Length: 96
Image 1 (cartoon, rainbow, N blue to C red):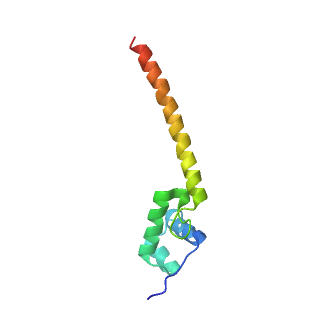
Image 2 (cartoon, rainbow, N blue to C red; image 1 turned 180 degrees about the vertical axis):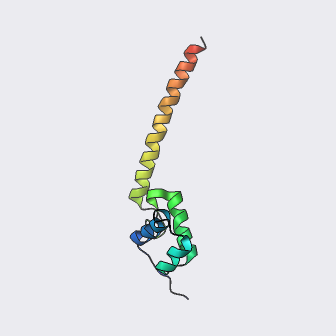
Image 3 (spheres, rainbow, N blue to C red; image 1 turned 90 degrees about the horizontal axis):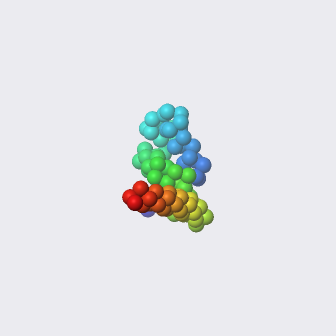
């Protein structure tokens, strides 16, 4: 079997930043860092999908990160629910 390299979260973040913020091409960054282009593309996709929760290590979100994400989502849903309740009350009054 081949050797599988492991990269730190910081390394992955810096590689993504070189593409996004420094304006370098994916091929250029992959060549400079001696990583596969497909690997860097995967990191970019992960960053797009998971934002600050990308690259938690060992392929899964850390439990604390997942709890933080769920709390944020819960707060947003509560806010949306309150807005809908108020809108329903206003709509009901206007129908009378």
